[in-house]
Image 1: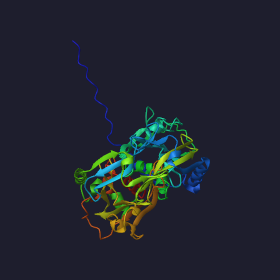
Image 2: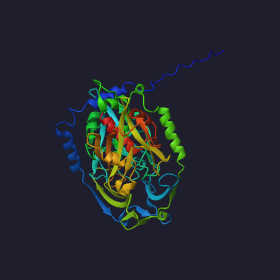
Image 3: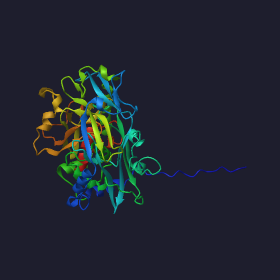
Image 4: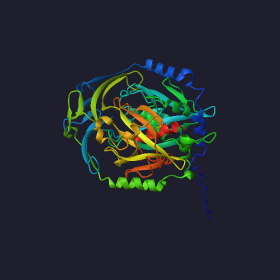
Length: 477
């Protein structure tokens, strides 16, 4: 008779890294003595700009190499069948704009946006990249360690491999701090999402440092967040997915004290998290939208010239073609379409203290390219040039006419420079006054900042513009 073999009890791992918020707080407090001191960062960035010639020129569609308009559909496609395409979209349903047509970028691949983190002398540092993108108004901005589509990191372009990819995929992957699938711009991308990742490397891992990369503390990154067009969109969305740092030192008062209190679940909120989710789920259920891809040639109200695809009234955006010469990319030159929006946008969030806890006034935003039609956006998200003055969104005048005493954050940030040309938005955090109370329109809700950060652990809840504003608020802590 054989005796039964008793299995060893499973070894359980902690559900959360309880020490991480304090370690992030130490990194967030480290704002002096590093690369930012004595102009070191600016000197490095200027040197990287000089080191890599980068030229972007507008060209006619016919001059693009590898791109053409498909005979059957009129869609703008690449000869490889990869990268992305420009197609048509038809949206119909309920709401203030019950039906519209538009061109849209279809890029089904899920890319990786990843930041590697490593501890030096007891302080976490983030590996950031000085990366040129053809659509950036100033070309060079700080991007994540890895910012690559699947076509890029599988080298469809037959160029150089993506640096540091091994720390995010495969046997050398670091310890995961954050890993979540988040949406891209729903007005301009069709159901596009990227994997937002933060991984921590063991201190023993020797990371060869390329000239285009630098280790920065979270505090240094937060300082740079106040500058215009420096921290790129992909960095901002990844940083927004970080767990919130704990608050070090003495208790804070006023705006920053209310911001810190919003991350304490015991402090409460205007609306409980289950009720917020119920409100949001109800709005998603009630938006009966029919969203269909259509051939680009069948999009009414738009026309194509040799240089652009543009709406008949000139509003919203246009599709153009560019030629790129690059010294710091996986390939040295290419051509591609870019989407150029009409004027600078406004992305603003009203914040207000209720019971000592800072809340954000969020708008359930409908965008035709979202997977689930609706995501949580800022109080105001628009491009003013697309509206007659009387038709501008609710709260637009409230945020744009706010006095300096109520503006807590104000900077211009670029959107995705790899697909959009000169796409900038003015990002604002405006503190609400006594004219705003708890009662707001049905598609708006007051949500504690900490509640929104918790939702960022899950994909497709919070849109790109709101994620940027979360990163900006975190930088202010």
